[in-house]
Image 1 (cartoon, rainbow, N blue to C red):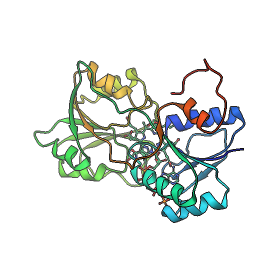
Image 2: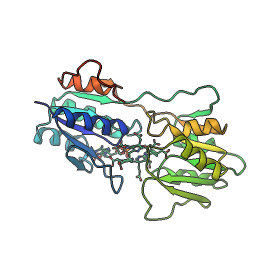
Image 3: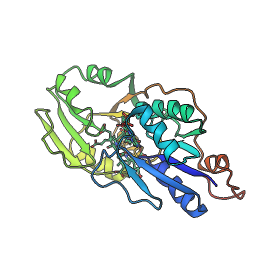
Image 4: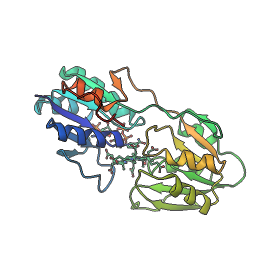
Length: 253
Ligand code: 3Y8
Ligand code: NAP
């Protein structure tokens, strides 16, 4: 019987834990511990880093993990690199459950950039209202463009106020809605939205909202992750675990 370690923190990871619990497959969901109250899960949860590749390899061996599923966010590149290395070291199979990158559609006004520093550089110019839909970890970099009024959205109330001289803060966890994001952007007179190409459904609302308001979007491309067995389909993960998925069941997210 499989004993799965699932590296989580995404909508897809949460959808997979529901399917694993329903199938009676032993699984543990792992969070880094970035948020105060992560979503409750129908499987046991562990919270905190493993202590690098060695720590994860030791965890895999000591807990008799038979399958490693990396369902982390596409920008959690360090975790994904460690997962590939530790699975190899511990001699257990790994699959990544990811979501396709977002692609621009008619009406989108995207400026694609490679990383956070390029996103900061793309904000050169006169003061505007800018929505930083990037969470908490990268806010400091934007102090290099202090002329703007920034709208920030964090999962938790920060212990110390953000360093940007002019900012408004919204504390909200996704998944978000188009109506909600559109109203938020209109209320703050947003001219530009900065976001990561997260893909998936949990954060896509802001793209549709920006399109409806004809706003510029600075879209940060994903960091590189190592070659690995990868799927976008939850049913494929269950089949990979040796679980017969009846044909015609609902598709994974
Ligand atoms: C701790 C677990 C679920 C998963 C929900 C998804 C959707 C909502 C959208 C915006 C963008 C952002 C941010 C975001 C989204 C989902 C998903 C997703 C983006 C939780 C969660 C954890 C985190 C960590 C957090 C980061 C932050 C990033 C906010 C839980 C809610 C901006 C990414 O305060 C901090 O330190 C927050 C850190 C990494 C990026 C950053 O730099 O601040 N996610 N987000 C996970 C852990 O500890 O291992 O608390 O329940 C999960 C989710 N966040 O089960 O429903 O699938 O992507 N998360 C981005 O996409 O740019 C918000 O505001 O529009
Ligand atoms: P990261 O930079 O790739 O990883 C940094 C370190 O955090 C890892 O080396 C590991 O510590 C620990 N870590 C990361 N994910 C973990 C997990 N699921 N379980 C246990 N330890 C984990 O990671 P990140 O970008 O900060 O993302 C952290 C978490 O937030 C992940 O669960 C990710 O899915 C989620 N998330 C991130 C984003 C984002 O924008 N980055 C967006 C949504 C959700 P050790 O080296 O000590 O093992």
